[in-house]
Amino acid sequence: MKIYNTMSRQKEELVPMEPGKLKIYACGPTVYNYIHIGNARPICVFDVLRRYLEYRGYQVTYVQNFTDIDDKIINKANEEGTDYLTVSRRYMEEYKKDAQGLNVRPADIHPLATENIDEIIAMVSRLEEKGYAYAVNGDVYFRTNKFKEYGKLSHQPLEELQAGARITVEDVKEDPMDFAVWKAAKPGEPYWESPWGKGRPGWHIECSAMVRRYLGETIDLHCGGQDLIFPHHENEIAQSECCNGAPFAHYWMHNGYINVDNKKMSKSLGNFFTVRDVAEKYGYEPIRYLMVSSHYRMPINYSVDIIEQCKASLERLYNCRDNLRFLLENASGSLREEENAILDTLGKYREEFIAAMDDDLNTADGLAALFGMAREINSHINGESSKELCQQALDLYMELANVLGLLYVEKDNTLDQEIEDLIARRTEARKNKDWATADAIRDELKARHVVLEDTPQGVKWHIEG
Image (tube, rainbow, N blue to C red):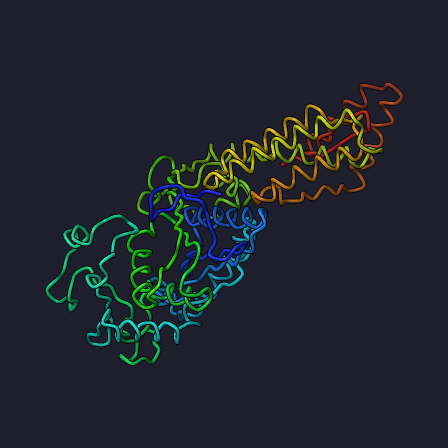
């Protein structure tokens, strides 16, 4: 598999440090509110990455943190007249509901910043001992100019970054580019005891400490949104490599931005949508579909029209799955010789899918292969097909859908007795060639969102919407 490495700005063969095993860290949410649709993209994209790597036989250790102490969390707690723990724990649970709705599997480890304070303090202390950090009035800052490779991920030399930085008269930092690894507690803020007094971690240091604790000094792959390249990931590299004396991550993957109606999403423009808002109107799966329908590095646009198109596209994929299930229930017999050609064609779509995903996780082309398989199934598998063909086709189809994390919703297709009686009456009317009664019953059922389809194997139905 080749991936685009942000560090080298080119596609590289993914070569694990240990054969068959991969250590991956993904930056998780700061839990002070519901996640928005921009947050949903890395969550879904890197869930697909993990699924695909496991599908290809890798043993993946996947870590995604929660930032549960931060200025935004403290501000939210102050607004609500509560404490940071109440806020962070509430929105952690809300995140889990949204992630489950998006069919995102829980990470192997979900560490919390507040559960790693000892590791953070130890790392800051080591940086101070080695001369990479200095304390001022209870704050501890990292000396960026001491790390000569600072800027290597964002490809911006330190001199250029310094030229764009500002320093105020009251700023106590040695250099405007220095950043806090430990913050002195302000009155009324939560704090932990440390060698520098009462305080709490800086944002960047927590990920470095958690990577070190749960995955080791060097990992295979670090991923996150494009907005994290600078300064967050740049700072992680500086802290970790200076503290550990070892490379931090061999590969870096970053997903592109999401726009809303072709404009940058922001609360001030009134185009800010949470995952929960969108899911309540359209369901979670169309959101996931949107996230995997384009290449992860490309910007994508969210609009009502686009999410409706995603919903319609999903319906086509579900129809193929449900048709196969229906045929399977009514089919019989082993695979016939002439059916091998159909399986060969389905296998070619599987090969196309793997080739696409091996090429920098190209989910757009992978999805195209899934639709190609659906067309083949719809065209060549019918009521005359053997049970074995139907089963193998369904297995292949769901194999690809599962890697993308799609087609995970099971609709409640149970009918009440009155509806079942109407379907039975219509079937009897058709046997008696009473077409007027049969059509009237069909129309009545359609008005109740029950859609019928007459097949050689009998009547087939589904509930609309």
